[in-house]
Length: 106
Ligand code: 5GP
Image 1 (cartoon, protein in one colour):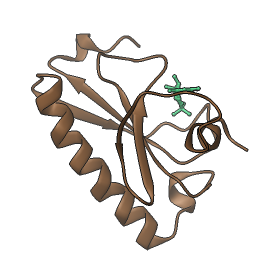
Image 2 (cartoon, rainbow, N blue to C red):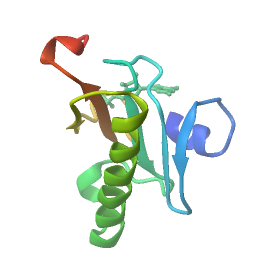
Image 3 (cartoon, rainbow, N blue to C red):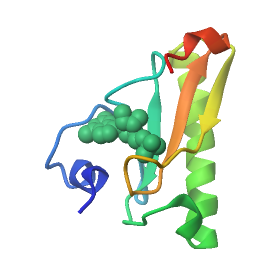
Image 4 (cartoon, rainbow, N blue to C red):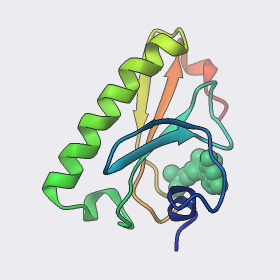
């Protein structure tokens, strides 16, 4: 079970910012910028591009809705979208509110 599946199951805590039947959005534990959010499918799929088309499209739409809310909650010029997937083998999208590239703590 991935660390993100444990978050979905409520076995480890996370600050959830949005939830639907199929998807969850929560704050990254090690944020690259204030308001850094991870958006994930509740179904355990290792990598983004392993998802079936319907789930993939649903995740993108959910991420778009969360990004719009994030832009208001964390005043910023834009919300950057990053796909990394190096550390946690559970499909996810990073949403990172930024004004300038310097806002990101790489
Ligand atoms: P990636 O797999 O895209 O390289 O990065 C995974 C992301 O998950 C990292 O930004 C890391 O900080 C975040 N992360 C790893 N473990 C946890 C956790 O237990 N809780 C939360 N909220 N974020 C986590």
